[in-house]
Image 1 (tube, one colour):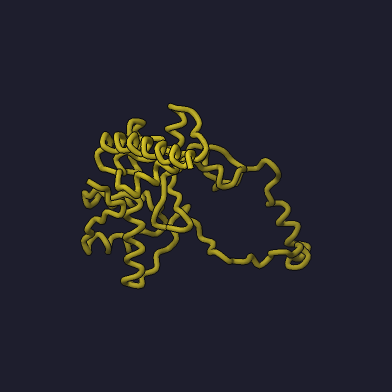
Image 2 (image 1 turned 120 degrees about the vertical axis):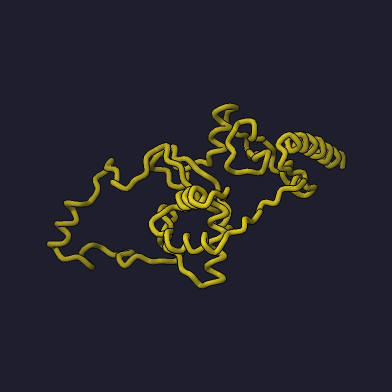
Length: 225
């Protein structure tokens, strides 16, 4: 049985109305947990993000940016870009600003603590994301690591180059170490092309071994050419 990565849940109009009314100030994870609890369904943050996109397209409804999902739009240019303080601030305002400016080593009050978890979505596909964990400060996007990769490396060590960790049962929120499989990029490509991804994790594990054999066979053939 193949996994339907975009498996849809049927949402009643009552749930849709609730999300429209109560989404403000909540992250996608918080909204998903809240909807599951109130309406006794089994949704996840990706499902809710997809639903919000469909509502926007269908109804023209504008959702406020979810907390931690980012508010600055691509291409936005700050009004002080490339300018010195003298260009847009009076001497008095500069003095007040210096009193409030963060010194080196200061941590903003709204900075997220190390260990915080949140969804991070792909720029090319805003409806597809992974739960990530903040592991450090000061390294930009490298501050955050997908939780499944972090758990795998805690048990098995660093992930080799050109390899990735996949979910055996296709559920990107099942972080049990038994559900995490290491495959090479070429092995994953074989599994996807030959539909060797299943909801049964044991079948997927067996399929990953088949992909390894196919990959080695293909490489051996290429070496002989």
